[in-house]
Image (cartoon, helix red, strand yellow):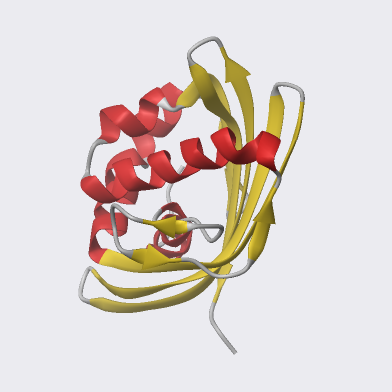
Length: 163
């Protein structure tokens, strides 16, 4: 699958989003409104770790937080496994995350047993490939608790121009 530069910018904008439910002491960000249920807090931490790994360029850590059978929907495309994502867009997503700044304005999260879903809305700005970036972003992640922690099983990303 190929993506236009705009689609790439849109998709990666969401990847660099940071959480909105608490203060991120490691990065000095204070996040805006939203509510994550206590039973989903571990899943939200996994989502944060995924985005932090991308921003740091630690693609191995990002992949470790994804289930092998992860399904990623974005811009009408689908990547149907961790390996497919790693071979197609992981590198460019990490480069975009490193080059842009994202703020989550609202995050919600719920869990039912070992399944959790985390939804985030935010804005990503900056420069990527010598082009300005200003996107309103949405993200839904579905995670499952495994013996060694939460893993991402599904991601749906979307974004649009403000206004």
